[in-house]
Amino acid sequence: MSYPILDSCAKDVPLPDAAPEALATSVLVGGCVLKPLELDASVLDGMDGALVQDFDVICTWDGSHGVLPPVRGVFLGDVLMRAQPDFEQRVDFKRMAVIAEGRGGYRALYSWGEIFNSPLGRGIVVAYAPGGAPLPDDKGHFVLFSRHDVATGPRYVQGLRRIDLVKVW
Image (cartoon, rainbow, N blue to C red; front, side, top):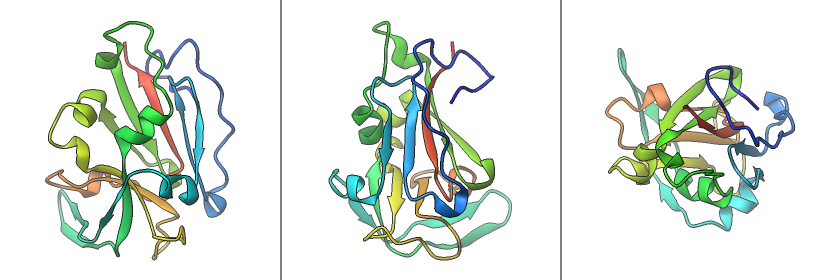
């Protein structure tokens, strides 16, 4: 998928469209990667991860929206490295952003440096219910969040459907 905002990568390998929201049982990973992925719970189970039991969705204006039930989280950086980022130049990592898209077209943005070179990075996770069942309250099968944001709600992506690595200049 290309984003009209900047050069998304001359060598993009097209991904199939994400499944309709009600059927999205996998997460597509694409953009400037050499190996586009389709990840389901069984694939994520095979990756390093941790149980997250205390994620509180805190919005900027109106505080807590509640705590998620226990979920298994896989570091977003590990997901991106599995897809093999397509860096044409040694310094391309400085030009990369990650766009995570969920239900209803909701998007959150992360920089490469934030994921791999800041204390926030290890707390940015793709999460799902152990066993791959849908999360409660129509949150979908997968969510993405940053555990160390002050206000965790604005970048909390419910019904996560795709993750794209894009070159911003």
